[in-house]
Image (cartoon, rainbow, N blue to C red; front, side, top):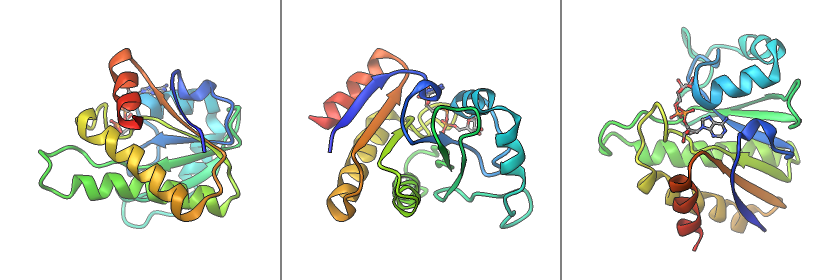
Length: 172
Ligand code: APR
């Protein structure tokens, strides 16, 4: 299965699903979350708002994922996942970030999605060091494919030369 690294705005990619680095409210934000909502249009927010809260103000707990339509995006689906906020590395961050990738891929498999793009989850506002997050992302995607198959194309969509180099190094 080809894994690509593209320096691109994830909202422009021609894949079946793009993954959103969201927050637990699923009501939008900045960064990639803001870009996806801007490109998808108001229908995405409306659909997210209609998702059930698991507790007050929380539609998607950290580490979990939810799927919606892509609305005005080229992608048919958006898979929203909530990465951990980096708190120094001793608060279970790695396990939660790994769960983001696994739960996103689980939803993709359940929906027969064969092409998917991931941003660098938690590596922006949430402060996760790319040196730790990027190898984890690559190993989780590879492990999922080896165990479950089903994926024809995975794209890591990133901003910046350094981030792209980090993914390429992790892919070996
Ligand atoms: N396409 C691809 N990558 C992007 C895009 C985009 N359009 N916009 C930002 N990025 C990159 C950032 O440069 C960073 O490397 O995505 C990575 C993730 O950064 P954030 O979007 O800040 O996501 P995260 O660190 O997971 O923080 C999530 O930020 O936007 C809010 O609502 C969101 O509260 C949540 C928090």
